Length: 266
Image (cartoon, rainbow, N blue to C red; front, top):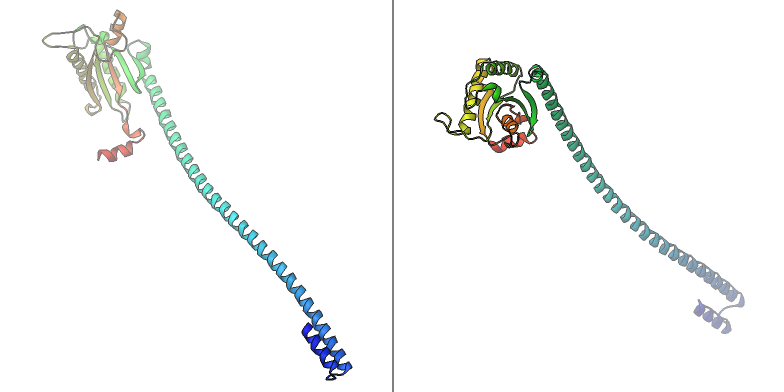
């Protein structure tokens, strides 16, 4: 604009333009200069606003990234929480299942006590839990003569009564175990306590079958003097160890992991 003013002034001096034309040109120049200054101010303002918007855009982008990270964390936490809830639900279901099984075993034991209440009260047998097994225990001194495997008259009657009660318990199998004290025996018929315990268990099994207990629900075993109920250091202890135990065989299908065990067993 300044060069334009100089040219106009030179033209006026040389008489190329009149004063009126010069004034018009000068006014035009001033108007253009003002308009240019105004435009430059507007441009500066726009540049400032653009810079602010760019800064705001960067801030918003940072906020978006932060929100995305928070959202990802929330999704991860929700997934972990869902897994925890599902795991807790599975654990609770397993606990409820085990409680139901425990309640069923307790109910079964109480029912066993009720069935044998008369014989228990008469002192002919005991019902107990040992090593997680329900056991009907009979003192062998009541059943057998010393060193013998033939049931006495009272012993046979007691075993028959027990067999009839056991036969009324549906879907259960039983194992008859023969136990002795630690006094060694050595006869042609019973070379050791193992044979004596075995013979007594078999005698009880046969008597129970004759009394009506199905043969496929009962078996025999001998422990000799290997599993004493009490120390063999007294007459009372030895008497407690001479016994016949009828064990209610556990139903393995109710135990945890049975399905997996079946798969492994093929």
